[in-house]
Length: 317
Ligand SMILES: NC(=O)c1ccc[n+]([C@@H]2O[C@H](COP(=O)([O-])OP(=O)(O)OC[C@H]3O[C@@H](n4cnc5c(N)ncnc54)[C@H](O)[C@@H]3O)[C@@H](O)[C@H]2O)c1
Ligand SMILES: [Mg+2]
Image (cartoon, rainbow, N blue to C red; front, side):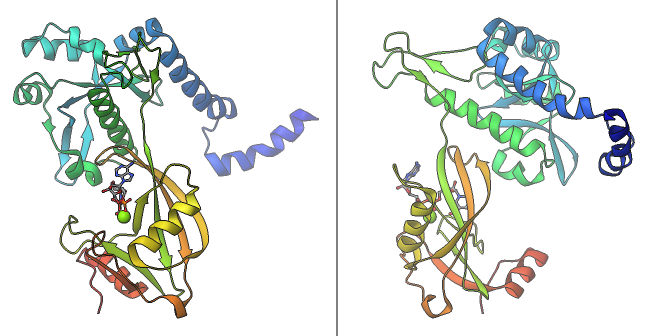
């Protein structure tokens, strides 16, 4: 009975997932990778062994090493442990730096992935030996392959967190990291520190026909964005959203709908929570706080479509 219902499902499976679909592999691959990463965070010896068989992405003072396949596409360079060891030796390091690698994930081929900042070494020599180029992440972010941008962003965020959290806030003593780099602990206070993200709400406000975008004076010329702001301690997502829109443009929003979330590495890790919200057309008069925003305006769908298509600055009439 079970067998016959399974075979009845086969055409549907093939339709959904293709000829090579395997239920066992499809379900267990993700689960086993997540459990593997979790185990590496808790077991220093297992993590060290995974590093020796894993892939390592290099950074220099938080700038990722990338390979440019064509002017529009960049990819991070995945090096093996022995490749990094050889590059470090050529650049005058004894290789002990490798132990400072930080776990960032696990590839679909089950290779543990790590990042390492070689900030003390000559970047030109490293780049030449690896046939890559160090490129500021802000410039490279939108040129990276879809799945690789979040991995590089996560790596940079973790490296930065370790660099600025070397001391315990309670005792002033140096903290020690675990092998995976998923935490730092102070042996005097027993406080364990975990990588931190600040929750930020970002909201597209609509009056039914137009949507509201604003710009800070620090934005590149012509760039407008949905309104955003940090959540305060004790606030819900909805409270933070209502407060930010009220502060920045003087409107009271309704009908808040959560849309999606994203880690944002700049300048220090934020956890962006994206929402939609509305105001009634009768209450859409803006009262911009110019200490926070240089400008905020209502834009029609045609204006936004045109700006996105041409890549030009989005200008209101
Ligand atoms: N439209 C946007 O502004 C936009 C778009 C994409 C990403 N972001 C990200 O969202 C973040 C927040 O947006 P914003 O700058 O408009 O926020 P905001 O409107 O809350 O104003 C920033 C100010 O909030 C204060 N603040 C409160 N909590 C803070 C914290 N945890 N970290 C730093 N500052 C804190 C500081 O005084 C800071 O100057 C930005 O740093 C940026 O990385 C914003
Ligand atoms: Mg803001």
